[in-house]
Amino acid sequence: MASVRKVDEPQEETPHEANANGTAQPQPEPDAGANGVTQKNGAAKLDEQAQTPQVIQPPIPLAPQIGDDPRGVPLIPTPITPQQPAARKKRRGYRALFRNPLFLRLWIAQMISQTIMNAANYGLIVLVAVVSQSTTATSGAFVAFSLPAALMGAPAGVLVDRLDRRMVLWVSNALRAIGALIFVFSLLIDPAALWPVYTLTFFIALVGQFFGPAEGAAIPRLVGKSELMNALALFNITFTLAQVAGLILLGPLVLLLAPTIHLGKITILPVAILFILIAVLYVGCALLILSIPKERLDAPALASVSDGQTIIQRKQHPLRLRVIWSGIAEMARFIWNDAILHISVWQLTLAGLILSIVALLAPRFVQEFFHAPPALAALVFLPAGLGVLLGAAMTPYIARRLRYTRTITIGVITLSVSAGFMTFIRWLAPLLDPRGWWHDAPYLAVVMGLTFLIGVALDFINVPAQTRMQEHAPDEIKGRVLSAQTMLLNLVTVVLAPAFGVAADRFGLSGAFNILASSVLILGLLSVYLSVRASRARAAKTQQVNQP
Image (cartoon, rainbow, N blue to C red; front, side, top):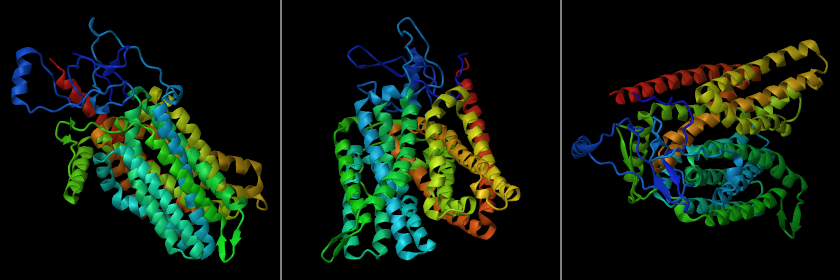
């Protein structure tokens, strides 16, 4: 009986190897595919084909850099025969990614767009806070940003899977540039009007529902499977760097250093200058996307993927409402039937929700823990961001050694213990130094260190869960899966983020952190248990299929 690879292990790139001319050579299929269907030889195989409906396989890509369908990777190692020499394991590292010019262009476009998006959010929040002098009015921008993803996340993913991905990416950047310019004209007419601010926030978030899934689904098309985890980790690092660059550097520096320009009756505020710069940079992102060949970003025109119960085909359907909702239902069935994919989506949602709650509580956190004004919320963002940055860099190496499940378990425990211990330190510090505890270097070092650990722990959950989701989501519906996860995250955030705000007002910030710590521990360990059970069931099914 053939040995079975554990599902929890990262998958190696084995389906295709390139010859000297760069043409992909198909390798002999293993005895059992990822869907557990045994392939026979000779007359038995012909008899089975006569009784079983054919499933069209995706065309073999023309270059080894194009990411194949991750679910096509067999659960059983490909047998080595004299006709099939053992392939050398490709070097996995960030250097190979930076030598890939097409991936590099996508990454630079992502880095710029994420940075200016965060700078725009900072400008919007500051503008609303200054104009309204109301925390409730400021929270309206948060709701306006989350609502489009909650309503349009999955439909946007369906559209992305049926449209030219390159067109979706560059048009999204162009539309956001137009939105930024419209906002500048609104500021010139009435700087105190809030409805244009909410409308712009909603519009940018709505466009982002198409940009995000198209970008995420494009990554596996530009890198190989052995590079996928590093590519995703690099995008996570970039996401953190963009938060630092946008929320701590670009946004604050432009608003601080840009002058207020008076041209007759027209007053150009620093926030208007910020959005002029944002519009120019969005145009640059659109040009970068246009430099990537169209065929390198698109999924196969016709492909079928089977998980044993569901067969999904990607065709050029007319974009009717019925087709969109049919695609959503198709995607939901596929996620539900793949237990590991289902659990990974929830784990990603948990990590994203924690990040949103930390951002929501940051202004009050610096008031109660540091006796500082809310404008210095960077005291929370900076150590947490550095933790996420370092965690994204080292998590791929740790996950390959500890495997996904152990890495996620460590992340869940570290995050919940750090959040709970932070409230204990806040209670203990005034007892040790009643007069100036918030200035004590040991207290500041411990709180900053715990915030740093929360950032690292988030990556221990996020990177393995995202890699699993990419591995189990076929390329033909990858955009829909990513959009479904985004929609789920924003649905949960719209409900629970205000609830945590109420908890912080009612029970204090320490009470809110205790609720967060206990919730993360219970839900995180439950997801780990369910993931282990699903992996064992899948391995047992594969082993049973391969028994003689």
